[in-house]
Image 1 (cartoon, rainbow, N blue to C red):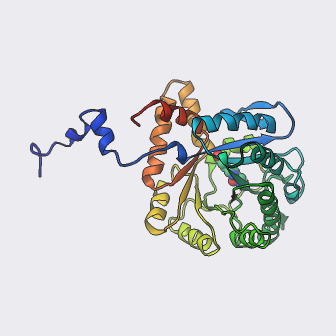
Image 2 (cartoon, helix red, strand yellow):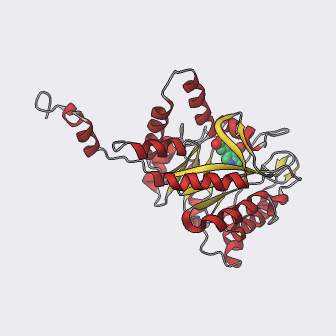
Image 3 (cartoon, rainbow, N blue to C red):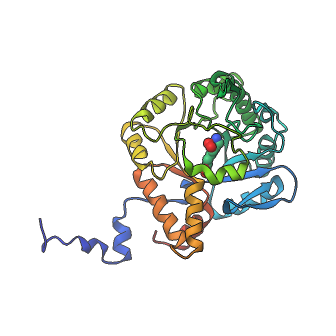
Length: 329
Ligand code: PBG
């Protein structure tokens, strides 16, 4: 049927009809908020590269969690900032290191009111900033997997609800699953960053956790954005190794990948709207070039439309406020 009988504008006539036919939704329960935790007390230091995001000491993390719960945000992703670093990141395997310490405090205060995802990587804890143990000028896969397993077990023992390895080592999902199961943590899910591209979009994050590389890059383990089907093997491998959901990072610029995962695999997709996107929006907003919140909503909806189940976003607080205040969105 063609114009003039068919007029597609009829379904855009007003807000009510637009929301009636809307088929993509963004809920506060879709949002996962990343938190950067540092040692010390009473610290709330704005991260220069991520305006509006903070390095927080654990006491202030507890205050933040209270605010998140009131807004309806129930999931957090924790990153550690450590003054103590060593050659292979094994400092993070200690139960006294920053994230295990923080998890215990958060769990004690909030119990099941908040879901704690713990990012699992060595890069915040190695003196050279690489994601693992360096051998012959490269990150050694199998040695790194061993450290990751130990750190993963420590995170689970501290009370982490979900373990999220972001290192991109081969075989880490199976190895972490095995050590968790052996120690009675068979109920703890693993959400690996299955598809993680070597991306310039991570720039502002590296300023936040101080894991810039002394030399080299992450291209021997993170994926190349010049490949269009490699992601299939990464996902298949992680599913075979027992992962429970997959994380895709970055989300923006990779919506084609998210949409193909949705079509081809039966597994929840967690998309990470990364630091570079956040900081670009902040800069453009400062210059009044765009409306920050409107733009972030458009981006998050595009990520949902592509097929994401949930989204890790630095904008979670602003978005939750917007979703709480508007009945149409
Ligand atoms: C650590 C890690 C990174 C990010 C999340 N976990 C950086 C990296 O891999 O270099 C980036 C997140 C962001 O940019 O928001 N492995």
